[in-house]
Length: 435
Ligand code: UDX
Image (cartoon, rainbow, N blue to C red):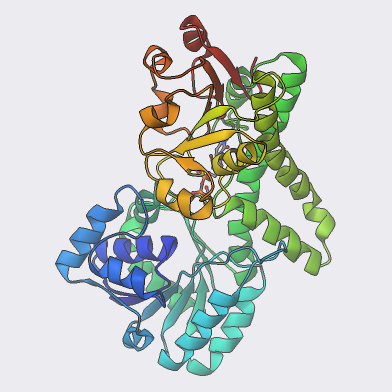
């Protein structure tokens, strides 16, 4: 099937390559010519494991092309809208500029019977408005939220946990769902659960899922605060409560908390939308979820100050990790980079390293020092902060590191190191929610 993907950022680029992998003829469109030039060369404009391989394969097959010319979407039966919905400057609400621009420029290129698929994360009510705009073209809107995780984006797109379609109650809606079934024939054949519902529910599924995940993380981080006050161990606590299948151990890793381009802005946009709908009380708990999350970053800096005898002014600090999570070069709302910046503002001499995110971090926080290797970052450090749990940091040898640093002091912001092993090697080990 010929399909188009509008918006070739994180979501769109992965979606376009994966749809070509499934055998479709795909044209990816974006207004950013640098991004399109890079994708046309078969190069992913960001780090994502597995993406370069499927991009190469799809480009070689001739089934995947990229362009800045939107008119090339004509003739496609299905158009996926994958543009971003960032947080508005200075407010909680989502900025719908890109979604609105994508839909309004698409209108001229649609034919009756076309299906437009909204994948962006939007405030509930947006799909209904966009469907009304599409009506004169004879195209039908399906709201099909995306649940991919960075670092696992290819796997999550090709083998999703579930697919959700929000459709209108009409024959056109049923036809649109059937066409989307053809697009997703391969994952559906694997038995992927498929939920067909109305627009409002489909839009809510995405923000409800992200709110739940954020709440789970903040819950365990709130427990970490209790552990710090009582001498308890949040990792053992998470293991113990996680054995209850109703709770589950996943997303109960206490530490620096959540960041990235989705969870923080999605819970805020959800609160803003609830306010507009007159049900702000229903989501007031998300304020606490956000506050607990941000408090962990401050606590990390406090811990560093405590370890340095009350002041970090002039102290040489090595920060391991800048990305908001491992296997990503994404530094959007990164807890690691935020802590590094706070430490810098409080007078520490901070050197940051990360296997993939240094280039992006330098652009965002040019005032910090950067090192390309772990060794260069920790050379002469008086304090080491592990803030993003890349495998190479998790598996660090305390004896090897001891030979490089000035002082054997490490703060584990992700609760991934074995305290006994580090202490036995002569290190002062501190962590969040753990004694
Ligand atoms: C998230 C959702 O998981 C995904 O379904 C949605 O489509 C987009 O948003 P992503 O932003 O890629 O995906 O990251 P995720 O793996 O959810 O992690 C988010 C943040 O939470 C990271 O900063 C991570 O370090 C943190 N986290 C995660 C914790 O602090 N503790 C945990 O137990 C799990």
